[in-house]
Image (cartoon, rainbow, N blue to C red; front, side, top):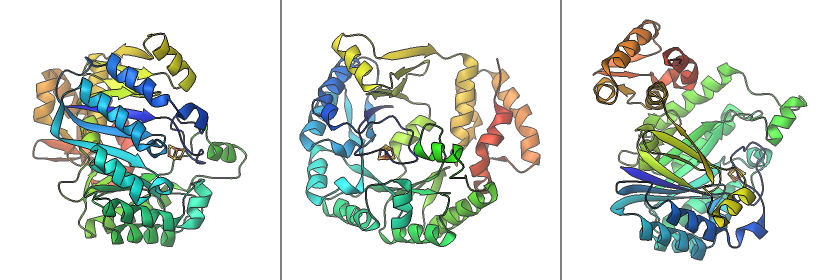
Length: 375
Ligand code: SF4
């Protein structure tokens, strides 16, 4: 199974916390899709099997017109075999989500929509530097339904300084009342290159204490479980059958092709990453120079990736699968290093699987450190 990711590197403006590669530059947007199409054509032979998932992310894909999106999708269909039942997702921001626009997108073949809500509290949205209001967010989900989407995902953020427990539970409750099929809920990270990073350096902003993070996470897990969602990855929750196939393919180690500035590609043995700069990207495409750097992954790197990716999921590391991908020495190494973590209750071992219990998932990074092999 393979996937294609298309990175649309434009936003209306930069949110205060965001370190994804994107720029607020309308002039560059006009013909940018033609460069993406050229890259799609140039990379036509990168994936060797049928494409099961296509994902337009960013940035803000919904800054593009339906005509531009149509041209990109057409190029993907022209150059790649796409499964009839492929999951085709687009990220949309509430301020762009009129019913007319969303109906246009639906008509192009997108069958899953991921809406960047982040919060249903206007004060929190303003603090995050989002352009939309809580009312826009509610309307966008209604518009997505009205446009015929039956697979809607909502993004929320928690762990925001000044966000009260009441604000957080209100946002979860509002999301649940709108009945999305999927929720992605991320803890705020204060990244150095963002406005929040600057505020932190100037001591105008401070990350919330770890014990509060855990409290917010526990509330989230509890409320979504009660509402019938399956917690299938640290930050992702879905009604049964609506788990994101695209994201799952990353955690399953499937191949993917990334198109656009800053996009990554992986084919099972090498990884490549496109330049994170629109002007350099355009100039590479114009001169037919590869816009990426590439590295061959060593066995240790592949093993570490498997451990890290699988432990993010509720299924965890499947020993049978590990045996098919790696030699016995790696399985033995894992069994040795996992034993103390099992006795500490940080890893569970059931049905030939090692997985992190739900209440410890938020600290999974610190647990994985003990399972990573060094050169
Ligand atoms: S959070 Fe989303 S909308 Fe905001 S700047 Fe980042 S990519 Fe753009």
